[in-house]
Amino acid sequence: MKKALCLLLLVVIATVSFAERVTVRLFSNNRIEAIYVSFDLGIYSLYGDSQLLEPELGEGMTVEVKPASTTGVTISVNGYLYGTFETAILRATDTACILCLNPKGVKQRTYEGDLLISAFDKNNLKIINDVDFETYLAGVVQSEIYGKQSDIFRVQAIISRTWAMRNMKKHRADGYNFCDYVHCQAYQNRCVRPDIILGTMKSSGETIVDKDGNMIDTPFHSNSGGQTANSEDVWRAALPYLRSVKDTFSFHMRQSDWTKVIPKDKWLNYFAKTHKLNTKDAAVHNELLTFTQTERKAKILGVQLTRVRTDFGLKSTFFSVTTDPKSGDVILNGHGYGHGVGLSQEGTIRMVELGISYDSIIRHYYSGASIHYDPSVSQRYVQNFVTEITKIIEEDKVNPGKKKSKKDDWLGKLFRVRDRMDREEEYDPEKDQKEGDWKVEW
Ligand SMILES: [Zn+2]
Image 1 (tube, rainbow, N blue to C red):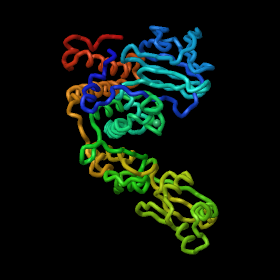
Image 2 (tube, helix red, strand yellow):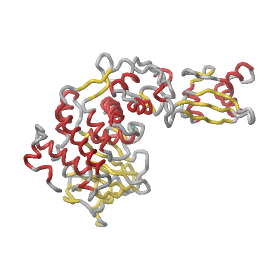
Image 3 (tube, rainbow, N blue to C red):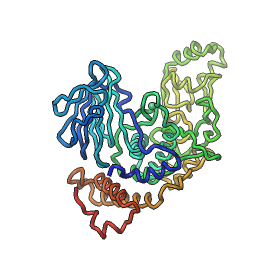
Image 4 (cartoon, rainbow, N blue to C red):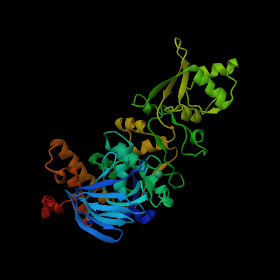
């Protein structure tokens, strides 16, 4: 059962030499002094290094892990202290396993897969989630974008998959693949939404490549404000697929517009002191107070707008300047949110709402790029999985909130689909009816 889902992944991996599992450091933006782990679903085994401490951990049990005074962690289960080990390891015994993590002073999160806990020092734990790659990806998609239609999630899954496959070694020196923070990609929880799993599953085997077939860098941002930015105007390299494009799809969304009021003296002094501009000069003074962007610019009087954005904590570099006639304050009228390079997420949401296809969306934001479909991924497997998840979503709509238990809701059903499809190597949609397998209760 452990190999569930991986059947598909193994096929994906065959041609891209990509690990079927990834290791992700959790709570990487927090200092964790202790963690309490309980079990939402399934059975886990607990190890202290290679020593099996508890073969069957499930509901009602709590593992407490704390840094030891020397390097190592202390492990207790329901108050019973096992001792000090280098690493506490929680291994899922099948695919339907969910951990509930409660670090001291940090909000609870749940994850699937295995957990490895060691200590950085006597005040900080290193918590690693060893998880199936596509499960990780669905969690990333859930953390990175909002929306309703599964194609929104499909687009995000493709760019996040492409990013992950290009950046597998990002934290090699730290001993894991990715952190769970925006430094890599946000992975703030396991995916709890079937529509996101549907979008991610539909994108199986899809990555974005340039005209030579190489996977591209896939930066994205919340909202372009109506025009995306050239990569060289934000970073150094001018990449052929990261060109500025008009993007009216980003209008009239949550992050389309912003304003910021700044005292006039503060604004002028900033350019005078930090950038040595002569603000006494009438032309300079006037430009700083009337700077206008109908199209994106990279600089204001020779000063990089990205620098101004950072120094004033602005949502974007795409702003124009006016002054308040009463107070004399400087008013920045801005558009969009984020660096503006590559794909606009809110533009994507709008384009999906307008019925524009997911591949057209990707081609709109990444000039000259296209979607590569790994031919070794079983179309039939993906299609059948998509059919089953769609069925689950439809059933959920008919009987909203009708949940008897965790095992009975959509996730329980999804796990059964995974397991069953894994057992039947060549999935036969008729088979469950023949065998009544579908009705098996947990
Ligand atoms: Zn990172």
